[in-house]
Image (cartoon, rainbow, N blue to C red):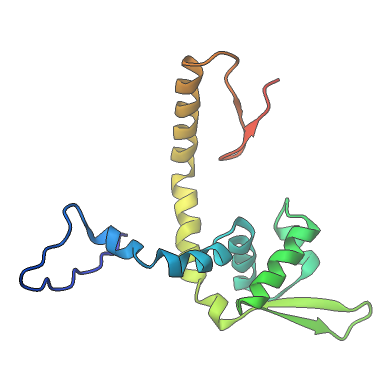
Length: 160
């Protein structure tokens, strides 16, 4: 769903630059939004917050649920999310000491956009893969060498 921003009224004697549309208006705040989006829109941040939306989880449980994340990547992402007020880490009085991560109300406010993004990925993932394969086939026709083998969306395996 595309949101538009209404144009402010134009004062007499002034004109909007040609070709300017509502999308351009939305990008005016890119300087403000880019640093924030960089914090919440990384691959691991989205997945970690999605995991924590369902229930609080311990570090190792999050690692098991996010196949492929390294210990360092998870630790760094959790610290960043905690710093940004999206996750709370609680030390549990257990032996050995455990840490449970909980999503904060601010983090939960991202649940709806993340669910929409997840559903989009499920719906359009196959179309994205087809577009990648078509692009790679077209590129192969104009270059030399074997066509690339495709793995997961966005991954390119090395030729055998």
